[in-house]
Each structure stands twice: as C-alpha cells, then as structure tokens.
Length: 364
Image (cartoon, rainbow, N blue to C red; front, side, top):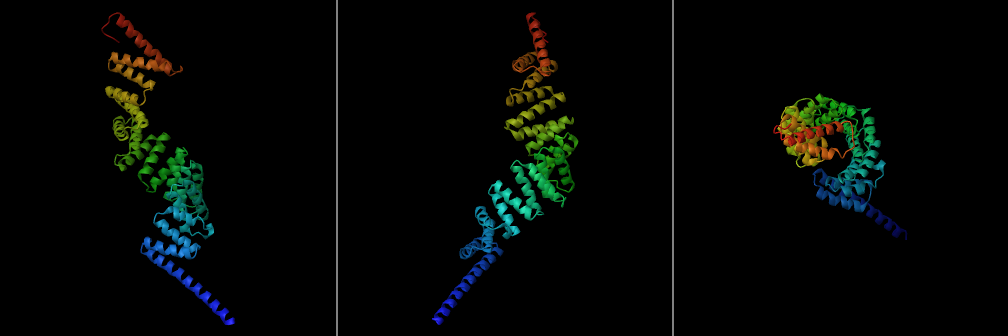
C-alpha cells in the first residue's frame, strides 16, 4: 500500500511538471512569434496557454495579441477582469484605448481616468482624457485634469493642445488664444493649432492676430478648408482688407456649396464686402444669393432696395424690393432699428406713387 501511494504521488507531480512545461512552451512560442510580428501564429499559442491556465500573465499576453490585431473587444473583455494593481502600464493603456477605438467614450474616460490616477505623468493619456471629457460635454473636467498636469510639466505639446481645445469648447477664448499662442511659440504650427488660434483671437476681437494665424492655416490646408477660408474672409473684411477678403469668401462659397447654414453667412459677408468697395451690382447679386438661403432676412431686402434706388438709379427694382421689405417688416414688432427703415421705405414709395399719378417720366 505504501508503495502504491508513493507511485500515485509521483505520477501526479509528473503530470504537473508536464503541464507547467507545456504552458511555458506555449508562452515562449507565442512570445517568439510576437517578436517576429507574427500575431497570427502567436494567437494560437496564447489561446492554448490561456486554456491551460487563466492567469494574469496568460490573460495579458492574449489581450496584447488581440489588441495588436485590432480586435479591441476581445482585448478589453480580457483586461477588464484583471485587478487594477495587477495591470501593467501597457496593459492599462490597452484597456482604455480599446474602448476608445470601439467608440465607447464613456468607458474610455472611466479607464483613462483610473490610469491617470496611477500614472499621472502619462502625458498622452492625460491629453486623451481631456478630449474624452470634451466629447462628454464636460470640458471643465478636462481643464482641471490638464491644469494639474501642467503644474509639473508646462511644455507637453499634446496636453496643452488638448487643454487649449477644452478652453475653446468652454468658450473661454482668451485662455484658449493664449495657450494656442504658446503652442505656436513652441513650434506647433500645425493646421489645427493655427486655425483654432485664429478662431480664438477673432472671438476676442484681436483681428490682426487672427489674420496672422488664419492666413498660414489656409495655405497649410492647400486652400481646401472652407471654414478657414470663410473665417479669414470675414476677418479681412472687418479689417478693411476688402478685396482680399472677397477672394477668400468667394473661395469659401465654392468649397461650401451647398451648405445652407454656411452659405447664409458667406453671402451676407460677400454683399457687405462688395458694397464697401463700391461694387454695387456685385453686392446686390451676393445679397440676392443670400435671400435664396435666408428668404426671411428683412434687412437684406432693404439693403438691395437702397442700393438699387440710391446708387444705381434703378427705381423699378428698388420699388420691388421696398415692397418685399415692408411685407416682412410690418409683421415684426416695432423697434428702434426697424421703425426708421419702415418710415423711409414708405416715404420713398409714396413719392413714387405721386409721380406716377402725375405721369412723371423721371422717377425718383
């Protein structure tokens, strides 16, 4: 009996050793394949190892292989079951980023925030977390996160780029503009930084600085970014660079068609630009285009009527647009701006009627 018992123990230990040897062989084979960037073969070995023993090591290696094969669901399902204190930095990043790559921003923000608590100087993840909060319409939380990091490192471009974007989304354009300018001084002259800097400065009324940022941004876009062309055109008109601004607004018009919302703003600015440069027929055409996108624009009818009647001496057209203006304006509540326009339009039409009654051929 004693001999039999000893044999049983010996056999069990032998099987354990064989199992351990097989596990290590599978892991080593998988590691070798990963070193050769052969994730296809590595996956087979890691699956075998995981089937033998569901340990932190086998789970992490299998998840890493899935992650590198862009199977982010499998990667996150494996990693989320590992306790946080057992996750390596790389595994923790893969867990958070797997959710981001799946489009699950809520889970991404949760795991990224947990990672940043443990690794507060991981600038890339801090920047990602800031933008994650922004996507959740919580830019304030992202700002707090970015400012904490900046207390220790004030030079990280990724973090400050994300922080500037968060300030912008929070509509603190002064803070955003200052941070974008700092990024530009650091050499971050990418399109997004230049464009966002220009947008921020235009919002705060610093139009010359906005021009300095938007102009190179448009060239970086190879003149293909409609929003940048439009913003630059508006800034040019506002700074009395009328001819230059009209060129950018015309470019924006071509790039944005048929974006109705954008075309409303562009055609209105075009009309103003042409009017201020004494190109009255072109101004009228731009305003007419504006009416095709915004037929309820009362002031535009008035502007067209005024330009036809007082500057181009086309009184028939002026009368048409004055009447359209009054048809809309008299439905609106009276106000200090609209009332004088109504009075003038009525006075001009009254004179027209009197002259018609007298058979005048001159018109007004």
